[in-house]
Length: 177
Image 1 (tube, helix red, strand yellow):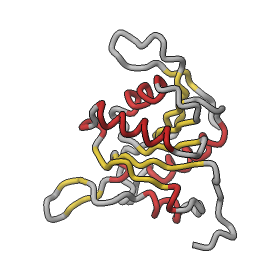
Image 2 (spheres, one colour):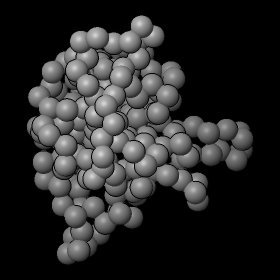
Image 3 (spheres, helix red, strand yellow):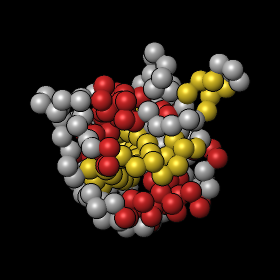
Image 4 (cartoon, one colour):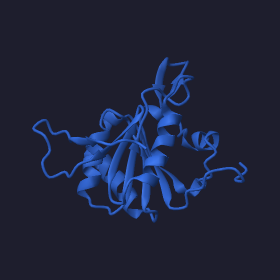
């Protein structure tokens, strides 16, 4: 891809973990599943000149099937990344649990979690828009914050000292951009 008119993000890494954004339809089996990430194709379509080396597949999994061990792998990958800003593709069902796990690790980085309700490979997907919103949030929000972006909104995590009685996190609404 020509980088002449492309956006460049040298201090940003994309960590891929799966979720609906990366699912593809298997006509033979009649199911949705994973074969490879769609993020590189999405970045090319959006004209984002992020080198392939800055796109790292940690796992490809439905977030409902994620375990604490998976979240530990995600945390370790985020901690090991040399970039101060992370975009993390993730399923929307348990995105908040992973955000909590990352916040408790005190990574000292801006981490933006992004997902989609419709797979990128489908014609009416929200995935490309959501990924673009995540890139904007990664540049806009202050360092050391976790932000979740999906379906036209971004929410910034409040401090994680008092989770609600259901075990989920509360978020403060952010006006974006």
